[in-house]
Structure formats: C-alpha cells, structure tokens
Length: 110
Image (cartoon, rainbow, N blue to C red; front, side, top):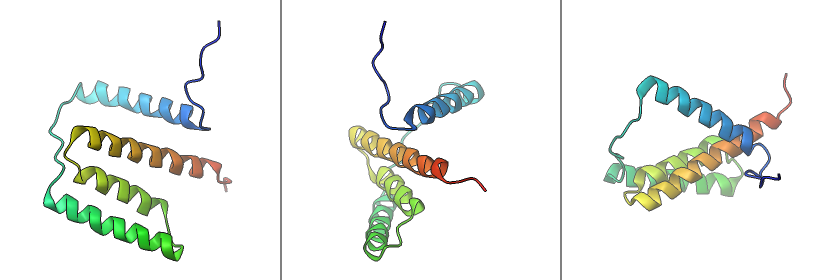
C-alpha cells in the first residue's frame, strides 16, 4: 500500500518530528494547558510596526537577518487579536523557524 507524502519541503519532516517530541515533553511536564492569548495590546501593535519598519529597512540595505525576520513574525502574532489571524501569524512564525533551522543544518560543521 502506498501512502501520500505528508511533507514535500526538504527538512520539514525532521522539523515536525522534533516539534512533536518537544510537545510530548511539554505535555508530560505541564499537562494540557489553556491560557489567554495575551495579544493585541497597543504596545504589541506599536512593537509590530517598529519591527516591521526595521525589517523593511534591513531588506532594503542588504542587512537582513533571520533574527529580524523571526522578530517581525512574532511581533505580528503578538499584535493580532482575531484567533484566525493569530493562527495564521503563528504558522508563519513556525515556517520561519523551519527555514532558519534548514539554513543552520545546511551549513558546514566546523
């Protein structure tokens, strides 16, 4: 029997498996957790605007970093209040983390 390919982007399967293992450790340690989002304050919205401007400038002047990109995605998530938009932003955070990890993993080891 043939099963469909779940992950087509190189490295995503390993990333997902590592996340799953970490989630299992979290559940074992803390149990099933439910907390308020804590997002959407004026501070978070202002922060997202500042970080977005910094990332745009870094992209324009060629000094972009993974740290900048991730900070922007996290700031945008923190600025959201609507659950569907917050979820979309958190998926973007995870995707940037996956891209950054793929970049780290592609580097020669010293």
